[in-house]
Image 1 (cartoon, rainbow, N blue to C red):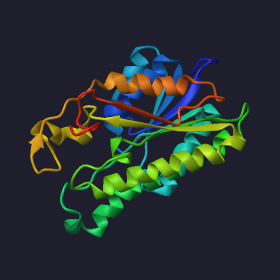
Image 2: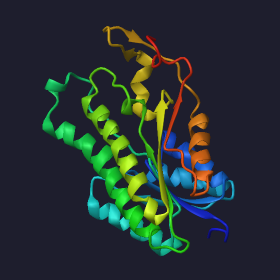
Image 3: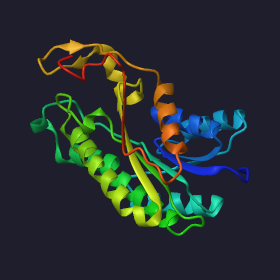
Length: 253
């Protein structure tokens, strides 16, 4: 069980990549961490890592595309811990990197269901818990990505959903004020994750060439999330960009 001083965090997409790194960082900061994701095995592995350093973690396999699965996830949080202090909406999905006219409606919808609707459903359930708990309030952090600002070639579904996440972040920050709920967004550029596994072959550039782009360590992202999570509720990081210093984003590459 958690210590009396521990806060409760829920991380989606917690089994790998940014979700795993952020979960470990939050556990080091005395959060008890609920680990949500589709696949039970990676979640169990992260829970074991956290337990190995004396932390508390609860893996809860969840399909963010299914509203009932999301409701059940947050019901588990309420039943096990009685409150929720932090939600990190991190889970994400990509479509095929092809021209948009070649995508099927089903491929478009699959990305929207995870990246946007899943984040909304989790936010909705988090607000319901946070506004009614004592002491009330909490924090929500959305993973926006550099794609919340600029697209890569052949990335319409992912880029559209990440631009929409920026709107969800601002709406949640505004509507959450009266409930002492803070909401911010972290936009991450070129962290080594499974979703970027193709990057070893080089990222497609606007001029049609491919370039292997600089990356940064996942720990840099995890520490940024932990910093946002550490703030008191009267302070908020509305938007933070954490990126590989030499990646082609600022200027002309």
